[in-house]
Length: 442
Image (cartoon, rainbow, N blue to C red):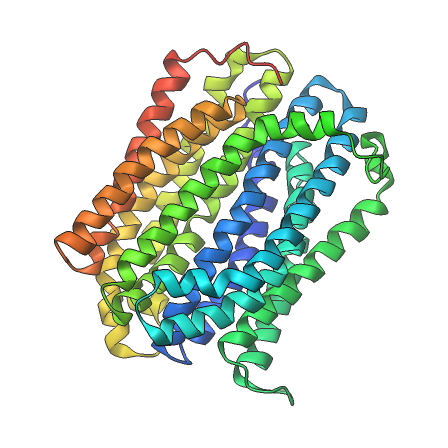
């Protein structure tokens, strides 16, 4: 494997970007529609949504490990070993997601009651979470397909599946939130149901298109082999630290929103809008992060660790240029972008300062996150977890200081994003330059 050209990077990352774009349209649609229902619903969907995202990211962490393994086997040309990894991972992710769904459905409201101080926010977020969690099995199973296609650098189906999910979610949100087309007016409950149904149809597309593709037979998928604990154990050996890392990362974001909730319903509503815009604008960066971890793992599988740093460097530059281009457009449109989420003029104005602050944070993210995913691609996931843990301690400390102790304006609270990405990038750079990762076997 040589250092990929910009064209090759785009060929792999383009469909992933479209996939992430379509997936994030789900969140944008929920936030935009609920912003027209009320500030309580808007804030509650942030709490319930981030709680669900933590559970989702456990699955994402596991399938990231699967992706690293598949990319390594692909680089080694051990194609027949990819199917058993996929099938056994499906057993694990299925059991995990169904168990968690049952626990959250039964006890999720009790947890929210303990951590929320606003009764209206608690009631609305409990309703949202109770119905949203039913999408977990479909969402995490679809992640497994995404890890397979990304691992073999064949990503065109990702955008189609996500497109189906996005379009269906928009239609169902319109029907169920506002009660159009003969459906009852469900509000925040309708948003949760719409998202779960949309995720189910995205998974059905993956199953259909994958089972009927003759070119994928060499990977030995869907053999429904007897569960192999050794394969599951090896996959968990790579994934467990990534899973813990994502739980820490998004658990910290949940704590972030708990701090913000103590500031009042308006700062919480502002933060939900900012969260949605922020994640949406991150899409090119996240896609390139996925490419970075895949190509690094593939290079390691081919026995060419000397290509890792050039691969990371090229993708890093590509990511920075892409983010600069996006920011150059949206920096002049703060009120236009924010008005997608709400028609409340005072809320729009209150959101503008935080909007400008995250645009700067996106530049830092575009560079530092690629470095971190380069570390992930080496399969030294224990190191990546350690980097994440240290960084998040500083992140939450800064957030508490600004939001709770000093009680500054909400835009200063979002300054924690600079702390997070600067530290995680610097630690990752240090490890890639000085760490012992070149002989890592999985």
